[in-house]
Length: 282
Ligand code: SAM
Image (cartoon, rainbow, N blue to C red; front, top):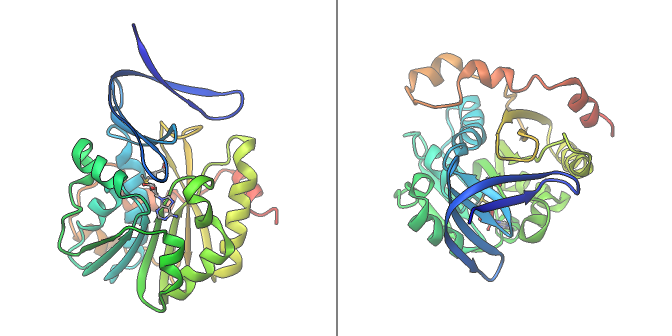
């Protein structure tokens, strides 16, 4: 009998992939965790039935959430990552020798343990000496920090369940305080293609715009996320991701990427007209 994983993208749209084998099926204190081995996308992590990473297309998300801010300010030394239990964001960050310290705050230790065992492709750098893992709610962790980080990356689940608080005005304000005077905040910003997601995305963008001097949105093509069109938020007290991109210096680092390059970096900020309109509606 054939086994299929189906994710509900909207009330009227479903996305399915054929499963070879279910490797993990368990409940943590926070969410249901599954790892599936699939024909097309390799191993796949789902949380509460929502797809988080697949071995086949995770490089797109992780390249874009890490290399865009890193190429904008090549002097980033201290980073806070919130969520990111699969380890992919940490893997990309540890490729920068200039980064000295990474704090990762993940609410659910079971996600990290599961990915270390079943998805080493993303979890492979969590033992790096610069990485310090804290198991707690990112919302609470960031409240205690002042003037601490060059970069905060919010690699969270969607704005419901444990990830809900990471899309609030209070959280963005606390991130602002936790960053130093040139700090950058990058977050996964959902998609706007389906009407169901538009309001949440517009609200999040508005809250970020009210908090930071610079607030932009950039995009990537991620086949397994709803609609395949995904957005990221870039906010900063000082750096502009288009004007401050250091093409020569970033390329001189020799970091080999599968998706990101400096031309694509600039192109990613050129948004379709309908998205520009949605973002400017407030
Ligand atoms: N790339 C993914 C996506 O957008 O689908 C996100 C990947 S990562 C697995 C998301 C992680 O955020 C999960 O492991 C989840 O446990 C964690 N998370 C959710 N809410 C959190 C919170 N309030 N504080 C810290 N981590 C949180």
